[in-house]
Image (cartoon, rainbow, N blue to C red):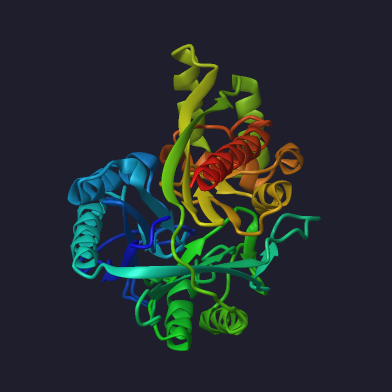
Length: 421
């Protein structure tokens, strides 16, 4: 067994000092006018058996998969490793710069890359022998925003990293499950939403940097705020304080790292291109300005495309008895709960917003209901997501099945190694 795993944490400010447009909510003017709370990128770097594994959390609505892969490639090059060893997770703040905006979008993305690489170099110089500890608590910060639904993933997942010699905390990673969209249309300032406020409060509690990771929050809004208009700064404080109270109850028992691995599993994702009559019916029912979406549907039909296919990647970080895995979609919380229940492991966290953001991904029952998260949002965001309709009805079931299969396979391999040792 390995006793020499090292870790380091670094944080860098990614707030732009030049004009940008925001993305994530309707605003008459999308230009950012000031800063409510700075944006950050946080880096958790492990070195184990001469290999690097890196988790990066970023205050952003979520880059496209193409831009995410570009950033991951840059990080992999800086570490001398492969992209599959680099996992990104986006906070999904709705008050972040748009990296595809004609107003300095590319400039902002390059700034983000530069800042992250600087953070990587900082982390490389701070690696220390470490011990780790998983814990799981409960938090009430989220509510299901779908009509007639009340399912919520209340798990507050926690991973503590401490210095192996002094046992001094180096970092705590918290996995939460609620949209970071309290400040939306009411705010024209850049903001990390409740993420930034909560990180600051909980860092004081633990005496070390705190990283927040977004979970399966596709259908989960912050509790007590309007699902469309959001809330105000008082709601940001309230949610952050609720998280602080939940974090106070966590208890950790540091252990040596016996199993650390990152891997990706490719899975094809299919979405249908609507026929002309169906497309017009969808557009009319939504009440949205769908001219661009209708044009794109027509273009696809003229090209003979009746189904769009893209390859998603399920990214896994296995660490001792726990696992963080995710896809570049806004998965509904029911998917993550199903994975945890069927593997009987509360420390298996299936997340969205991982290595990109390509639209909502509901479970089958909600897919059939339709609505904004399942269908209508593509009328606006198909340009970012790369497909004009939601993934097919059985997609969530296939994802859950694949995650469970990979988990069982890796744990079986681990058991064989342990028995051999």
